[in-house]
Image (cartoon, rainbow over all chains, first blue to last red; front, side, top):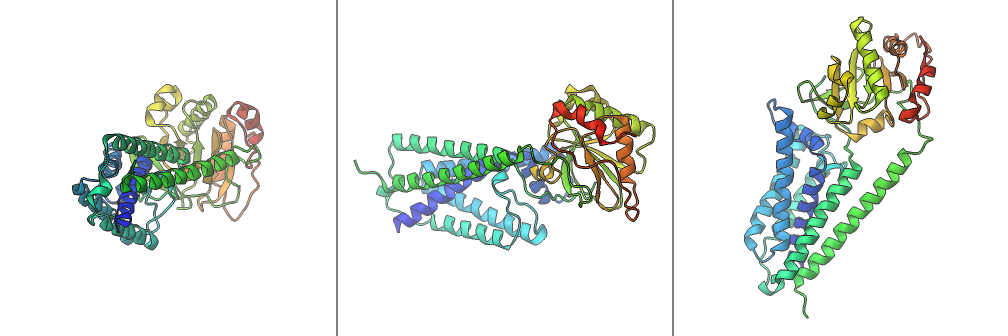
Length: 179
Length: 212
């Protein structure tokens, strides 16, 4: 059981780190997705700032969850973020079906569709599994292990950023303002 | 020494994540190499339907969505402020616009550079034509804009009528006429998607695109 919970915890943490790093590589594209969920006109710099904020908001909890597994209080915010992703996915499916979600920046060409809702629900489910209690001995890390995990997590974010920058892609464009 | 269970799990997970990202990077490398293959054509195929595109308009920093075929003929220019040939095209377009030769056309200059880069070019800084930054790589792929400048004439039905590198005023006039061709006539325009040209080769390639 411990292995399952720890796998879930690590997987969600990695997901958040990769998603944050990848989104940061192309805030302009992600901002156009953020715009879909803002019902009023917002200046582009502010949209970009929100996009960067959202991108930055997902990586640190993932980073903390990965490197400080003994702090169980981190599980709840991570679960909340996963639920927020699921909610956004559902809203995107309801109101902006078929448009790019850019959930992983340029790393993914996924759109708001039924399978996306299912995927985000599964992610939230995995985050829920990570809420379960594990034996303290399984998560007791010494300082060296924490530093190594932190370095690996930073490297993961950097690798995601670089890979997304290389792809720099975006999917088929689709914001709503018609020129 | 006994490794904590979490550390073992985290190691494998991280290894998996890194492997996945490596695959992504290698896949992109393959795409990049394919895109830079000199056999790739430049510009969308004449007669094909022009793709919708998304850009950030520099004038008011808003995201715009352009749907060719909405009834308005469109002249698209793929340009970069740092490209000297593009400056010439922007100047030619400005001259044509001031002379009223582009009336009835939607003229749009698209670049992959941020707004701040416009400062490096007098022509870009001074132009009154609509400029915007391409937001998705899919746009440059759809229009096969592998080098600049690239001018694309799209008629009111969203059909590409001409696509080629262009610099001179005469070429701009030819392209603007191509935009306004009635669909039923199907008049042949002496401009087709050209073989890929690097920026340095554009001046040699452009005159062939269509003397007025």
